[in-house]
Amino acid sequence: MSSEYFYDLIEPELLYRHPLTTYQYESSYHRHNAYEIYLFLQGHVHFYINHRCYPMQRGDLLVISPEEMHRTLILDETEYERITINLKKTYVYQLSTVMTNLLSCFDHRPDGSGNIIHLQDDQLNQLLYWTHQIEESADSNLYGADVQTNAAMAQLLVLINQWFQHNSFVPQDIMPELVRKTMEYIEKHITQSITLGQLAEEFYMNSTSVSRLFKKHTGLTLRSYILGRRIELAKLLLTDGMSITDVCYQSGFSDYANFIRSFTKIVGISPGKYMKHRQAEVRIDLLPKTDYH
Image 1 (tube, rainbow, N blue to C red):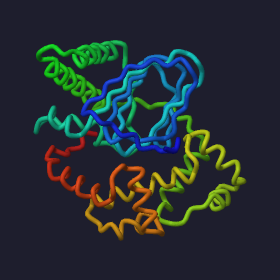
Image 2: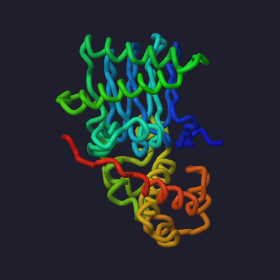
Image 3: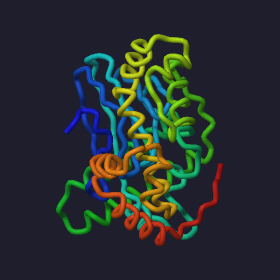
Image 4: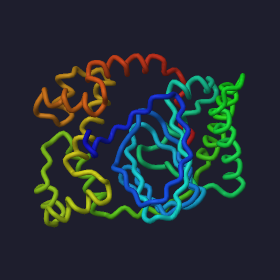
């Protein structure tokens, strides 16, 4: 499988990780088929999400929806510690109620923004208390451990949603302007032919400089990034019920067979199966959609 494959499948309903890394490392832009909570604890790391890049500080908390591409860049061999929790939509539904939609902090904000808050010491301690409870009960085979895990996860999500309701944190964004503008150009012209030469002409740069800087900050070639964005558009159109043939051409593909092959490789299922899955998922999506921002 290519190192630029950027759709990272999450199998369990709840996946909790608390890893330590002591070497330089950079991931490519990728996405999950699940929501993600990311708590930064220590290290020298830049976190990229869509067209933004944040230098991380202890206590930075991010929430990431399945549609948002993200990556981490570990800048040196300083010990890098973080907690990540991946949650399937169906799992969070089970924890939510008609009055309390625990997906609000993920879904009710503009795509690629409003993802990050910085926790004060007392907030960080509260969060670490509940993550510790999850960590202990998730690894236990004792009677009731699963109920304790779910209860702790619900408490954690309530806290996070409360904090994001009142989020006024303005993070430092250090994404280079050329990379940001390249991403914006791609989004604007995603249904059209996009070449490296066009991008170089648009930004008055030579093609090698554009390609090299983009790869440095995304971990992806321009071709792979454009393909990924077209697949994302195709998924939205399929969810809306558009025919697979129309989706192919409306999402920027000029060859039907290539569209089917690319979609299946990246998403893991064919466009037809994806459409059926999403339509079934939409039918059970009965939670209130009030935007609290």
